[in-house]
Length: 65
Image 1 (cartoon, rainbow, N blue to C red):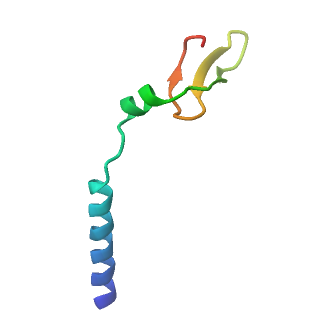
Image 2: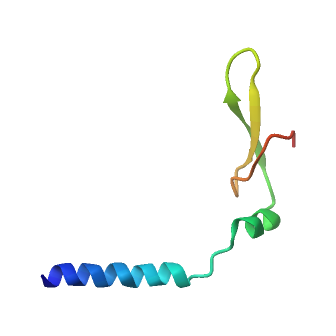
C-alpha cells in the first residue's frame, strides 16, 4: 500500500512541476524563431501538394517560402 501512495505522491509532485514551469506558448515561439523552412510532400499523384515546415519550431505553411 505504501508503494502505491509513494507513486501517487510522485505523480502529483511532477504534475505540479509541469504546471508551474513557464512554457513559451506556440505563438511566441513562432515569432522568436529564426525559421529554416523545408518542403514536405503532402499528397502524391499527378497533382502534388507541398507544405513548408520550419525545422526548428515545426511551424507549417502552404505558401512558398
